[in-house]
Length: 167
Image (tube, rainbow, N blue to C red):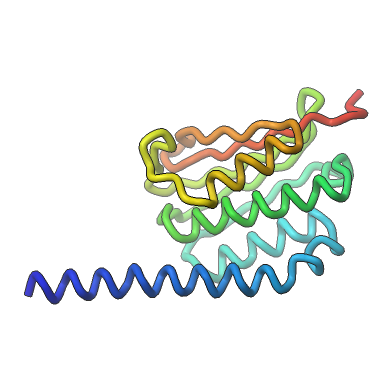
């Protein structure tokens, strides 16, 4: 029985990997469409996908015209980072609620994505390409990505990108 359970768990993990790869492939077929619609539309679509693929409920608060604060090429990076964060939440967090907030704060574009899931310690977790790619994208914008425990358990992903004309 123990060996059977292990084989089933291995098969489930492999199926999760296949599903993730298929989702990534599908997303790569349509990033241009999301980019053309803009950051706000892309964030809302990614959140809808999270809700369809999990039992989590999400709230989205995008401050008026906040998405226009970023240059179009910077929005592409933020869309990809948002996609990866929400994908990680979908696959690992077991969250029931996700909160997405974007606003201009202290001269920077601020994106906070917080879940109430199981949480993790980013210092001890085996880092995959996703975490490294997110960090590299945000740093390429001159910004920062911090991953800390959320206010209600879970995890808070905080993206900050300085704005050139933030006055």
